[in-house]
Length: 217
Ligand code: G3P
Image (cartoon, rainbow, N blue to C red; front, side):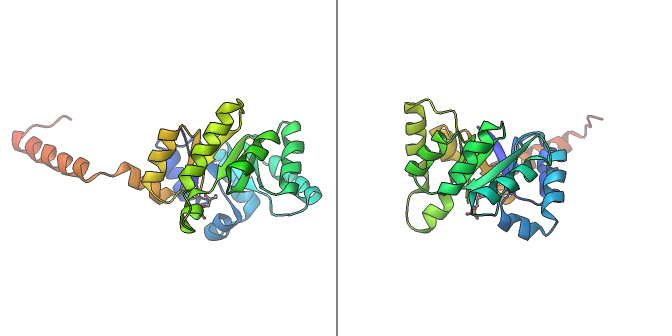
């Protein structure tokens, strides 16, 4: 399973890229607002840091303007993936951009039927928002499971990019279900690393090592 980080914060992206964990980055208008920088410059800088797909989201709601935005964003770097919303205009834009060889991430997906449409429109990625489903008492991961079944039934190549991830269990379940990608906020990635028994074990090893009086270097 590929790991993307869901942020526009350049410091977080640089730190995580250095671990070798990062296969790509996803951003959205809310994350751009939170990071505070210029949108186009931020995307360009992220593309310099990370080799993998970097999702940059369009903000127009009509097909023509969305397509123009997609063309402009795709011109920033070769690894830009264009994010479009799961609307009729978004699907039309997806079809055109995909036909031109640009990767498209169809976002704001809240049903397996929507995911089926995105695959038929040629999307490279579909982004089911699991956390926002959970927020309204629906089972976000059950939606991912349905999408996995549908895509496998028809050999769709669209990658399932699990989004709106809120905690480590979302990541675990995504991996168990065979999701292709999970996009994870930096704070959740750090939670995946930490385990109290790792800390406890490390403390014990370091104490015993100090008792030997030896040094490696
Ligand atoms: O990038 C889209 C998605 O990951 C948003 O997550 O936490 O705002 O629902 P969230």
